[in-house]
Image 1 (cartoon, protein in one colour):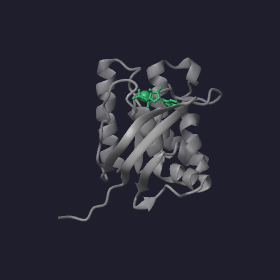
Image 2 (cartoon, rainbow, N blue to C red; image 1 turned 120 degrees about the horizontal axis):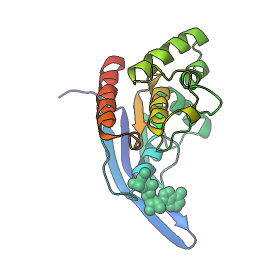
Image 3 (tube, rainbow, N blue to C red; image 1 turned 180 degrees about the horizontal axis):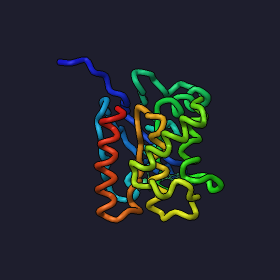
Image 4 (cartoon, rainbow, N blue to C red; image 1 turned 60 degrees about the vertical axis):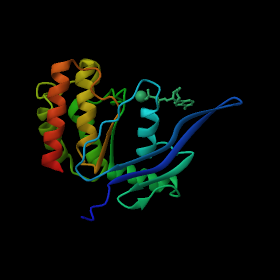
Length: 198
Ligand code: ADP
Ligand code: MG
């Protein structure tokens, strides 16, 4: 027996949406434990509630029932300010549709979360470049989102989500815009980065 605790734990999570007089039950008592260093793939048909579950796990939405625990911290009764702080310090999120800032280039988009966390501009720029190069974007450092392909934008969004080395990285179909070869390369690169950065 060991006593390693899950980094992220979902207990009996239910979620329903009110649609007029109807109650749409999307999640019905989902249990999920993610251990430190573990990679988990959530697989299911379109509309089965994957994004809903990720939004709840990422503290972007609240469940109708159930409890979320991050590093043994119960998140259910926390106020919005505390949840925002936890999102910033613990979680990285890549959405199905990236939301890069249009007026900033790739490097600057990856610098921003670091500078918000108090890293100085020089160090933030260096780490952004290093990470973008690792993700195959070494020749796109100065490109703005509109000058990048969908797959390149998505890789910048991945770099932005992992640059502060969050304990939990939540990815919602992040590689869908990439072709098969690039998708596999990215999967291996993400695994290597996880092993390196923890
Ligand atoms: P997936 O990501 O697996 O494709 P989603 O989690 O996006 O599925 O959606 C699951 C179901 O919940 C869908 O039927 C969707 O219409 C419904 N749903 C998601 N968000 C809302 C919402 N804000 N209001 C009402 N229904 C929603
Ligand atoms: Mg989805």
